[in-house]
Amino acid sequence: MDYSLLVDAYEKVESTTKRLEMTEILVSLFKGTPAEVIDKVVYLTQGKLYPDYVGIELGVAEKLALRALSIASAIPQEEVESEFKRSGDIGLTAERVLSRGKMRSILDFFSSPPQQAAKKLTVDGVYETLDKVARASGEGSQELKISLITGLLRNSSSKEAKYLLRTITGKLRLGIADMTILDALAIAFCGGKDARPIIERAYNLSSDLGYVAKVVAEKGVGGLSHFKVTVGRPIRPMLAERLTSAEEILEKLGGRCAAEYKYDGERVQAHKSGSGVTLFSRRLENITHHYPDACELISSHVKAEEAIVEAECVAIDPDSGEMRPFQELMHRRRKHGVEQAMKDYPVSLFIFDCLYVEGLDLTCEPYTKRREALAKIVEPGERVMVSESKVIENADELERFFEEAVSEGCEGLVCKSIAPESVYQAGARGWLWIKFKRSYQSKLAEPIDVTVVGAFWGRGKRAGKYGALLCAVYDPDSDTFKTVCKVGSGFTDEDLEKVPEKLKPYIIEHKHARVESRMKADVWFVPGIVIEVIGDEITLSPLHTAGLGALRPDAGLAIRFPRFTGRWRHDKSPEDSTTVRELIDMYRAQLKRIEA
Ligand code: ATP
Image 1 (cartoon, protein in one colour):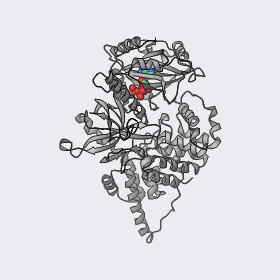
Image 2 (cartoon, protein in one colour):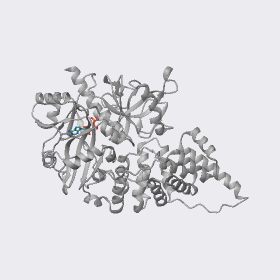
Image 3 (cartoon, helix red, strand yellow):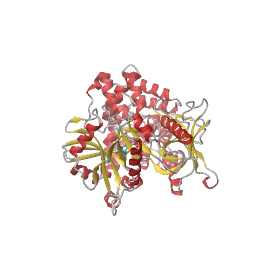
Image 4 (tube, helix red, strand yellow):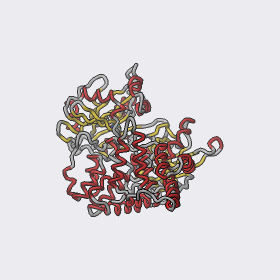
């Protein structure tokens, strides 16, 4: 398959402003893709080579890519670099430089004909080369990368070069969500969107879109029946709904539930096989290297040859052993100095679920069975515990347990169904788990997580910088982002410095196809960065598109006086933002509180 077909599709995706069109473009791309390369096409389209959990990433330094571009185009490095400074976009730089280089070689042709004719780039060829680039390490790897990239650029058209260099530097960012790909696969190979749930389940259990695409392209939907949980492949996490009153929670859960402390740390999914332990984040990245101590704890306290358990990894005060806030775990995210961070910011593990043990897939077992399995395999210690849990049957008891959890340094409770159907719903936010947290500082019961979709230029002290960010919640039904607030306060000077830098890679010329906004931002972004905001309350607003028409015909919902809480939710993807439905529920809960 020619790489140019992929590039044509990227061009179309980039210029569309409609979410549905995006799916259609993918459907025709997938239909025209031979089954044997569809996995590669899926990974490449998301700017990857493998599913995230494999941990092999493209992220070649721009400087190096520019050097390769200079060699391939025979245009001096300074010229290439100044072009890059002008546009700030490695893709556009490649496109412009290469077309200029080509012009020059046409002129040169009359004096000395080129030695070699360019070969057409194929998806296989590009993928293999990029794989070599991603894996090159150690001595001589810089040179190797440059020569591999130069080779690709020599054979590419200027359009191909644009996307190649964006991919190589880890900046493709077309904003195509997993769910859009699942939709497109269902339409392309399974006769329509009705097949989505089956494809989605396979994805939820394997977290590997390329693999799912390949099976479905080769064997149709029937091929997915053999999908099973496998140690080493992360399972997409089950998520909780939220409610703010004890009565409502109990009612939803059938009058009885198991309430567990909601620890404020980082969620980890630990896969143990023999003496090896792999840890995956909530976003399914391989984070084993951030927590060698947590791996050690799992290895010594989980008494099973093979197991998959989920735990909250919490920073603790090395002197008092008390739980510390979530932010302290950010020190673990660095590349170097993890040894020191382990000493300064040690962690404890609170294990709360068991998904697999000794060959048995427990995801279809009810909660109580999974907890029994947990009790059997976990040998508790000072720094490894099974999460605090209590079966609760009335609202007063639930309130008391909630207060106890908060006084112990937790965020609140996660209330879990103990009904026979309380399976582990991989990849889903459902009513089998309901979180109960509350903020006492404002009428808005708790902070919300929003995706940054645009920005407005600041004035006065913030002139020339962003003055406010346009933020959106997620609507899974339409796979779009709907605006809910403009956030300008709560940022420290240090945050303000960081904002443009963090957002720069996401800038696009027009509103992204998956963003619905009535406001016209000065700068638009591909949905990518999630931040936490708190506000005074949720109000009806004609300016915002979140929940538009759900409560009043021409009004959406807005956060009043929104403030950034200081939490960059790097652990969340844009699709993990608060949803429109959650926002509507929060608005209704707020009305009830006010009435009461
Ligand atoms: P939040 O933004 O509140 O952390 P989230 O969107 O990351 O939530 P939810 O499913 O809504 O995830 O809330 C449950 C989260 O709470 C889990 O992802 C997990 O990290 C954390 N947690 C802490 N203690 C528990 C527990 N005992 N059981 C389940 N989850 C727990």
